[in-house]
Length: 76
View 1: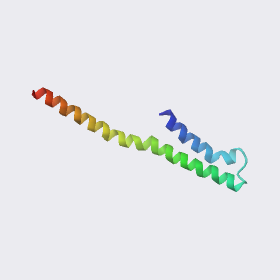
View 2 (view 1 turned 30 degrees about the vertical axis):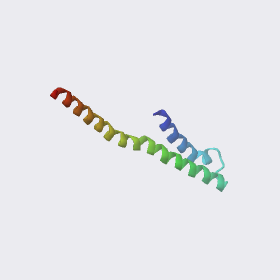
View 3 (view 1 turned 90 degrees about the vertical axis):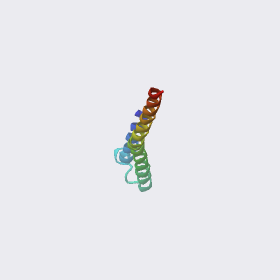
View 4 (view 1 turned 60 degrees about the horizontal axis):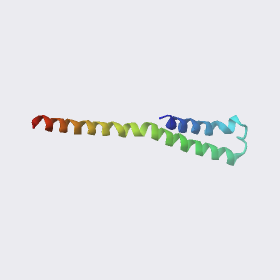
């Protein structure tokens, strides 16, 4: 879980680094950092919030499967 937050935070640092380290006047370097930072933030957000949305239905399906097995055992 910490790896996903780290990717998100590194993306934010990449976005603001041209202004922190003083190379925002170099257009190519600035935009490379901003674009890579945006990609990292988007991927980090997808990993953080996208997997949770997918994990919940998977947990529900596994619980339904357990209930079916439990019901079958009780009927025998």
